[in-house]
Image 1 (cartoon, helix red, strand yellow):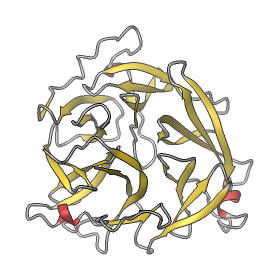
Image 2: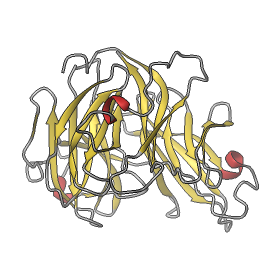
Image 3: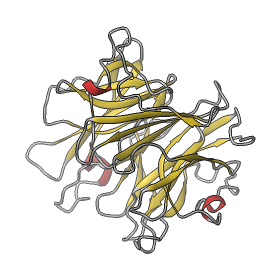
Length: 346
């Protein structure tokens, strides 16, 4: 669609946030809001924090965030909150242009769609959708969509031959269903998905046609008590975060941030370590569990966004300055259940 995909993108300016809204009735929409990350230094008057250019359309039912990439946002369209999906919408929040994408695959399977878009390479976007059974991790379908052809591929689950010995096929790996979301960052022209292969956690690089191309090991973790709490992209590099409990104290955790500095050499570098006491204060948890809940990392800076376990706050931890600041406060009923990056794209 003309005007939707324009080849000029800029720095990250904010975060769109999704909460349950004022009511959790089946037909009620989710609540959308916007967090300005520029400290007022940018003109964001044109930002539509509630996506009214979509929600006020006569045929719009319930929308929820699924992904964002380089200025575009992917939303799922449903009849009701817990109903089957009607399809997807890919939109440009800067220009208010959007494109509808039909639903694909089985309506009974758990569905995970991801957006790939690089305005420096192409004016078109791609989606790759994975489906798994409820509470099962085996891949059952893989489909790819191109905005150029406006069509979904057939199921690719059995068409994934080994690529130079790097990827064994979708039926030989399983989906990592950890945390509140399953991110799939787009870096170096590939989507990247955390999977299990023969009992080991790895990252598979997936091209925009839905084909696995290579396997990347995750950072070496000598202690089995560590677990992944975030996987994403910042400054053009993959970032992988783990946390662990500090000693016997159940109210104190340590967060480690790794970056894949050398992509081809698969070299992970530890960028920083911080504990919950340094971020939330020594008594911030009041003796309760203070496990890190990582929301995202800034696209252009070494800043990690986390939710405060008690105060309903979204906080930003600057790893370079070792500073913490609150960037948003939500009402008690407004649990943060999804975010999308706002990158101005003209």
